[in-house]
Length: 173
Image 1 (cartoon, rainbow, N blue to C red):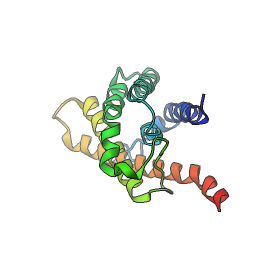
Image 2 (cartoon, rainbow, N blue to C red):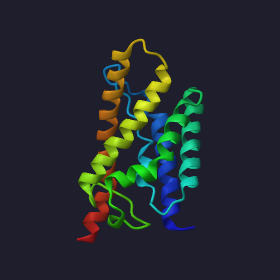
Image 3 (cartoon, rainbow, N blue to C red):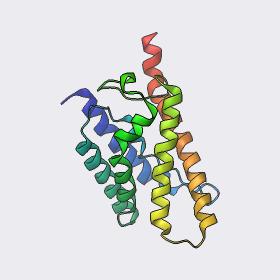
């Protein structure tokens, strides 16, 4: 097993635990709930098969659904985003900009990483809250929850990425 695969598994388990044990208890101003397990989709290497990404995303969502008693909502939202993960990355990175083991980060490609993060997190949160609401009533409340949760989640993801890869950048100098 490659070290990269072990890193991805540990990251996935850490994100699930962080989401279930801590972040789902935060409701900033009654609207913003950070949802960061989509960070896994940003950190999967390009070489990983589509099936691995789909299955791991589905199992992540299903695990979170089991802990939160939300039948299939998280699994559906993250699996839909994972299905288009390769295409979404293609929107922000040229084919010759990355290689198979390329993993975007705030330090290697800051503009593209930020755009990718905003797109993936926003898409995931929009899908999740639209599945949860499943109604046209209370649209303003749903939109407020989507925008505030997306902003809160993006800030946390960028902060996590900055902290995780800061050590690596310092040691390279």
